[in-house]
Amino acid sequence: MEWSRRRTVRACGLGALAALTASAGCLGGEGTPLRVERVWLPEGGDDAGNLAVRARVANPSGSRASANLYLYAGVGGDTLVRRRSVTVDAGATTDVTASFDVSYETALAQGVSARADLHRD
Image (cartoon, rainbow, N blue to C red; front, side):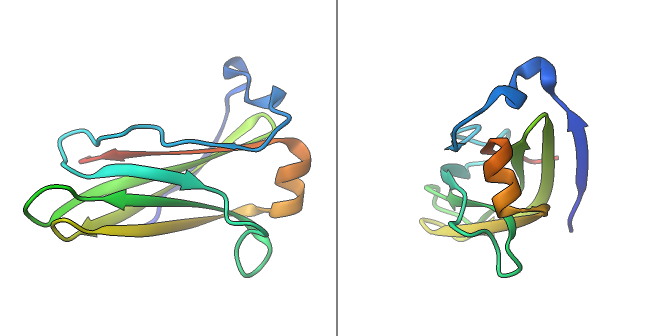
């Protein structure tokens, strides 16, 4: 299931970003043992040249776990969001990617950031 929305977050100062940054928005998910280990922007974007955000999700628990992963891309003054359902086996990791409707080059020129959060929604 995919969900997207765009909202302005100028109050947070994302429009002032001049450099490429990426971070895990939350080490552990709300109500889930899953953890976001790493968030990054794949160089060149997706196969179509659009901006993509990738997150590595780990499950350090002893049983399979699921959650919703929210991937955020801050571009200029906008925050773009994608939601992905993710299930990870016990002791395993998985990489999840979301693409956005903005070219990779445009995002870099406007300043881009990335983060991810896990929730049990």
